[in-house]
Image 1 (cartoon, rainbow, N blue to C red):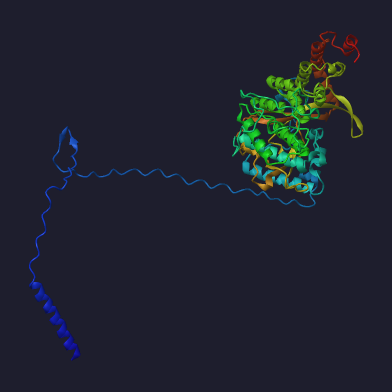
Image 2 (cartoon, rainbow, N blue to C red; image 1 turned 180 degrees about the vertical axis):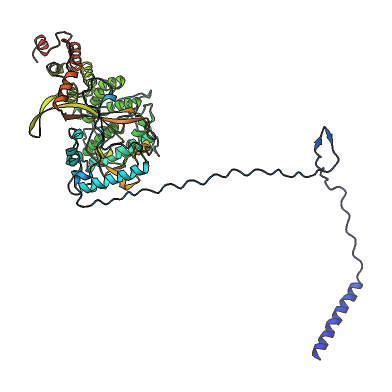
Length: 572
């Protein structure tokens, strides 16, 4: 009953609403649009033109021309898997069985020319005929494992066994034990110097100003100016007056300012030298430099530069001479003397000789005198020229001694294994990148040294790394050698052409040494026949060089014998 009543109420309400709407007046019409705002009519697009006339037909949309799909590149080949680089050597393996296969004997006999291509070449192991990079990588890692196994029993045991088994290497100037190792602060500064050289060779110097604002001895016209030499004990001489030290300044017989401490050469045209000096200067600002630090610093930088730039372009090595000219230290003096006698380029030798004119003579005399008897005649000639240009009249007696000495390339008698034997001193060469294990111990040999620089051996068939890596990689632990252990140090280096060098450069670095080799009777006879003049009065290149220097230094002339010159010259 209640639901019916509610429904009736709802119907009554709806009827009332309808009656109310019917009683309202009609709604007014909407206003017409304002004529001042006519609708904008857009023109229709023109139809395409055909034969100069316009068609009135509507444009038919063009069907897009299908585009050819770009060629699909084949998937990149899967790189070959890395070879096994970890080897275990049986504990009872004899050391001699760990040695590499010896290379074929190089040509023997005296070198009678100044052509370095004729100089015998030595090698650590037989070179592969067709090097496969992965196979050579595995072979190198295997050989390093063998060396580490031998050296674990005794320091340098592998190298001792190698020299005993290889007559071609026995007479090389190898160093062992402490003589071939660098440690402590010397090693720290050498590591830093090597890093600076690598960065400068790569041409990248981050956040370093090449010409610091506080530089005081840069010439206004941007030319070279040698750093002032502070003390004669450092191997140089200078007429420049030195400023009195300020109170509280430590007395260091080294350099007086940041420019001099680096042998600063800001005007060098090669970017390398600007960058190298800038890196050194930035490092020096962050380090307290006392006498000991200064000594290690300069020796390390000279050593790193001489080693790493030894076979670089002549322009680079001429810059090296200019750098050393500004470094008043005995090691820089010795380095200049070596450049004066071993460099192949006359302008480099001349610049080095000019720099030596203001250096303390006793620091470089032995280098010149020993070079007079070097078993490559070009070096002896260079030494005689240097003595002449330096006006070293005090060395006249040494030149006379050369006249009474035999050609240094001839056989001489010596003791060998308790017996007398004939031996010769001869120039030999080694390919720098192919013989890393001849000059350095592997990283796993001997007492570990966390501060030691390491480098990866060069692998035949694999491209050599960039200059910023020092010519070496360093990302495979099983292929690393230690740069703090150096068995061999060359007399000089040269870049020379190599046949079938790919993927290595066509010109590669060779290091040169003097080897003393025992001869057979037949070999000794051959040396004498080729080096002894066939006619009377014919001088050896060593005697020619000595006579020429004697004439220039004394302004006199005599027969090319020691006796004749001693009679002519007053006793010294």
